[in-house]
Image 1 (cartoon, rainbow, N blue to C red):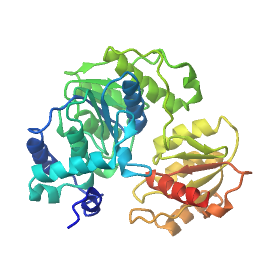
Image 2: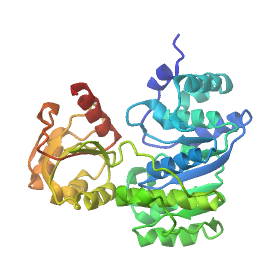
Image 3: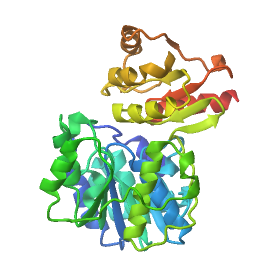
Amino acid sequence: MDNSLENFLEKKTLYYDKIDYDVIYKSWEILKKFIKLPYVIHIVGTNGKGTTGRFLASFLNQLKKNILHYSSPHVVKFNERIWINGIDSTEEQLEFAHYNLLEILDNQLLEKLTYFEYTTLLALYLSDGIDYLILEAGLGGEFDATNVVKNDLSIFTTIDLDHQNFLGDTIREIASTKMRSCNTRYILAKQINIEVLEVKNEILSDYKEVIYDDNIDTPKNIKTLPLYLQDNLKLSLNVLRYLNLPIDDLNIESMQGRFQKISKNIIVDVGHNPLAAKVILSELKKDNNKIILIYNSYANKDYKKVLTILKPVIQEVQIIKCDDDRIVDSKVLKNCIEDLSLNVKFFDILNITEDNKYLVFGSFLVVDEFLSRYKRDK
């Protein structure tokens, strides 16, 4: 019988309609007897969680701290989700943690745990005895699997509409769910919705706030980053300063899949919601050039609003086919694009030319699909 992690995860529920917090809670109650947690930094928000966490993890690594950064989903390989001391986790580390979880947890819990819950437990097990654990929430806050452990510091990135079927239909509802994940103290990034600040004053009034400083000293080459990444980097530096760690002479690590230029005329970005589209638009407008948008979307995303936001810089939309049941029907998406009076065709890697500028955008799945075809063709 194949008990490998890969085979185990293939049988796991990757997507679900309802969160059952009881399963991960019971699992953690058992597991916590076997490990000693480090200082826990919990990152919650709509956009910017992954890059804020990676900037922070990279800086802590440069400062010779032992660090584990847990994020999701991955762009190319599962190992990206658990980043330990500067590199993706190895197969040996993952299998070691997996084997021990199989020994520690009973079969009933092992069977009920979802894909994300189990991988969260893998990260928690591997964090035993390190200095800092950075946990990126999945889609929620209060009942997210990552919130099963008590956090020492909550980082709230920009909060906007997304995952309404889980978190609520309004900014107020979504912000409330996310902010109820705080356990002790928190830092709040710059926000675009006044409701977030109102909710903060209501829900977090009894917790200590680490005041965000937008004028914090930054690396000299920060201007090479898109503005939204500059904001995420500043947020991570504010955390370092709160931890009484030096913020001088730190190097900026490139971010995979975040406004990443993989060639002189191709940018890939894993953004997938209107908020991401807005920040991408502001960057693309700087060059005053039209782009060919290589795009697809999950059916439950507001793809019409995303396309409407990006329309001013779109020369043409090319729909990239993705093999996933959650992807919107291609005919529905094509009709939506045509209703917006945009040119549309289906993507073919052989039609990529040096004469055009391309943006690959829509989700981790879209970027992964494009990169697999692009690398194969290269």
